[in-house]
Length: 238
Ligand SMILES: Nc1ncnc2c1ncn2[C@@H]1O[C@H](COP(=O)(O)OP(=O)(O)OP(=O)(O)O)[C@@H](O)[C@H]1O
Ligand SMILES: [Mg+2]
Image 1 (cartoon, rainbow, N blue to C red):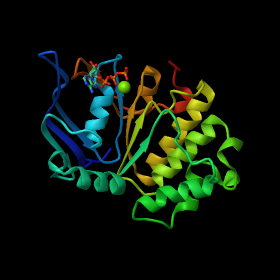
Image 2: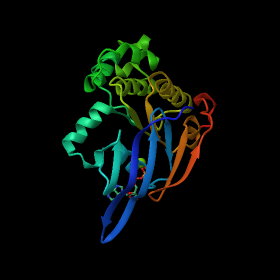
Image 3: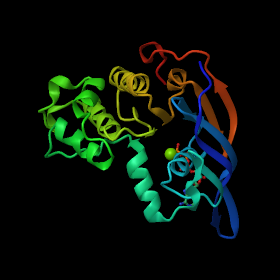
Image 4: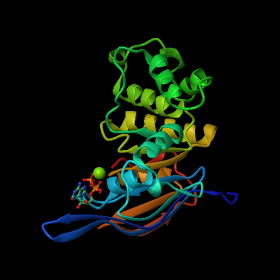
């Protein structure tokens, strides 16, 4: 792989909570360098700090101290209003639940995503990438769970985000459907170059990424580089 440029960097990041006079470091001095086009998987036990890490990386939450550099600019210093605008224009989010608009069809849901960003003309192309071209006119109750998750991926992709954040994207899905959703994320990464950061409890999913970060008690205690990405169809489930 050619040398990739850094898109997101954490320097000396702490997230500290005060509880009854004692300090808990949900993030304890994290340094991290995310490269453009990378797929990074974050694994770790419950309470390890995964969601906190994802929220801080994506500007949903601010760190207690440290720097969050996006394209070299420190977003930890941004005001709430500036952060919201930044997220809207640059970042995509998908969650375990899909948060789609029931009264809109597939294409209309994706157009809502496109309106949030700067690009509006690629909706059909995005629907093609997620494999839903034959379902454009369908409403959400006419789709399976996996198809709905692919609509939410399309909606997030439609604004052409530089980075896509996924918190347990297959958490509500069975193995077969979950693997189709992972295939969709891989296609988006390969066709659109979208950087992906995926949080999961499922260690099998680690194999689809370029790099796996094991989070424990607020630190990244192990980092594994995958020489090759395993196809979602080939991974063990759970
Ligand atoms: N608002 C808060 N106030 C106090 N402590 C918090 C708060 N949010 C998180 N924590 C603590 O920070 C630590 C990390 O929480 P986090 O939600 O990041 O874990 P996680 O790895 O995502 O867990 P899970 O796999 O269960 O989702 C936990 O010990 C949690 O109790
Ligand atoms: Mg969590």
